Image 1 (cartoon, helix red, strand yellow):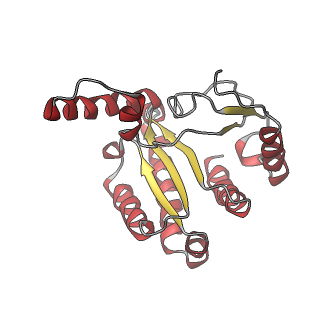
Image 2 (cartoon, rainbow, N blue to C red):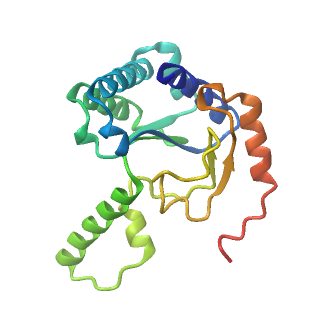
Length: 206
């Protein structure tokens, strides 16, 4: 299942690039996932290593990032991951840092609540350093892993919840839920989600 999911990721990325989506965030591994049995985690880390290594060293896969000028970012509590994986992620981020047209965020060892707590901690340090009293939403957003708001969340498997995914950024996002499981998610379903999104009247909570 996990391997099929990783393969689907390549297809999904292709579709996003083809239709011109400027920024995509993929929930790869949650902080809750890190509590799974050791053997399962070992398998997941191995798959992630293979996937990142593929993007980095497979000419065809990297050519896609190059063609669309995609900057790849890995965000989350990365220090909780195996050293080899951290190193590969660092290399890919370095290799794509010059690209500015599109952004691909991989959320790894990520939790939405932790991201907000982390941003507030950083902000508190700034406040102490500069003596700034008034704090705005923009100040917090500056310190988030992903500063931009989300427009659309696609939730596969029929789950009608965010599961700790980019909680701040998803405040006014439209949420498209499909019963289709992630490995079976097709381009047809993807286009259906985009059509559905284009028909929504977004009022941003007003």
